Structure formats: structure tokens, C-alpha cells
Length: 300
Ligand SMILES: [Zn+2]
Image 1: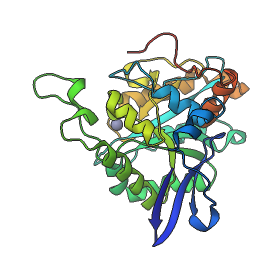
Image 2: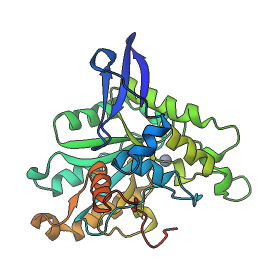
Image 3: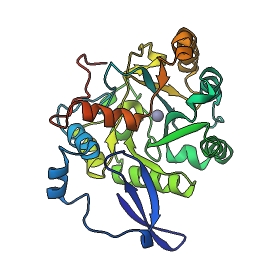
Image 4: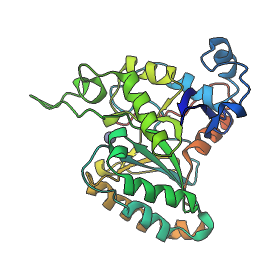
């Protein structure tokens, strides 16, 4: 996906196109045969790999102003994906959702998969928190999929009225390429590995932004269960909460959800799911013919 210098030596960010796992490897460990930007390769892989299939699916219209991309998976899945956003904040990380999940699910389910959408600015001012999250990952308590949430995470537009079409990354003067790449640099410098996913700040995007994200080999990920907005998760949902202390309602909603699901959790019939595995299983279900993860009913 990327080639860069790390401590003066050439490195690559690589993705396994069948499992969506990413890794940072030094150039000595790599034999380069082709590039993902080779369109012929992309076209032929589209129908046979979950990675290219998902990018091809997300790059297509309609381009929704809000919540474009993958919002959920097959309803047959027994559980949901937990995603937590870390938009820039002066407050420390809210560890509550992670601690609640670890206290609720049995030890057998560890590491618990969680997806964390992190902005570059949050990373740069929360070294202790990032070290805690890294230690939870290393101790195999959590299995974190790091989602790029842009570098500066421009705010929503509120001058006269709230206008989605002028806010967040759609704000005038935004350099989308820099927003994506600088966030990746912050992640790598913080010692974490970027995944193949990108979450738009405010979940707001347009055709140009979507195409740029897809062109850079990233898969836009939205949500169909934003808990603070009282959206109820179903099987295969992507739950959205904020772990930056800006949205306590969402944390309360997550606590309530775990309480409601406590019997199913005990019986092992409701689990936290890995976003990468969900995407792979949906792709396999659809036999790679046509990628369908878009829920039938539009949300928001
Ligand atoms: Zn955000």
C-alpha cells in the first residue's frame, strides 16, 4: 500500500488481500512483483479478493453525503463490530468501553476485537493513552484494528446553520491527500499499524473524497448503529461510540447494550466481531460475484 523510510531504512505497509491484515515490513523482506495501483491487476482481483472487492464496491455511486461506505454486515452474524472514534480532544482516553467489554466477555473470547478510528492530532497529544492501548493489544486483551480518521479532523460547519456539505473534510482548503497520509505517518510514528479502513470525520464525504480514499487503497467505513443517536444494533452491525469523552451518551448506550445482551454473551451467541473477518465472510457469502454489504434500508 505504501513505501516509506522508517529510521532511515526503506519499509512497506502491506496488506494480505484475503484476510485484510496489514503489516509493516522492511524492504529486505519483500519481493516486489506488481503494484495495487496497476489497474489491470485491480480489475482482475476485484472478483476474487475481499480487499479489492470492497474497494470497488465503495468507489461506486451513489455517493452519500453522510455515512458512505461499509455500514454493516450480514444480519446473520451473531454479534456486532465495536468501533470507537478518537477525534481530537484535550481529554484523556475514556477507557470505560474497553474495560466494560473486558469485564463482560469471558476470558476465552480474548483478545477482544475492537476497531479504533484515530485522528493524527489525537495521537500526537495522548502518548500515555496510546501506550495503554498498545499494551492491551500486546497483552492480547484487545485486538485493535486501527482506522485512519484523518490527521486534523476538521470540524463541522456551523456558521449560520449546520451544513454537512461544507463541514469536516468538505471544508474549504482541505488537502485530503495530506489528511490521509499525515494520519498514517502519525500512526506509524506512534508504533501502531494502519489498517485498510478509513472513517470520514462526521461520516461526511462526497464523490471526490470517496474516490481519493479508494484510490489510496482504503475502504470507507461508516456505521449503522451510532449509539448516541439511538440507533439500535442488529446482527453484523458496526457500532459507533466515541472514546474521547465527547459523547457520554454513546458510552451509556454501550453499557446498556452489554447489560441487555448479558445472557447471549454468556451463552456465546452474541460476540464482538472483527471488522476484517466480517468483511471477508460477507465477501465469501456473496461468492465474489457482486459485493453486497450495503444494508437494504438506508440509515440516516
Ligand atoms: Zn471523529
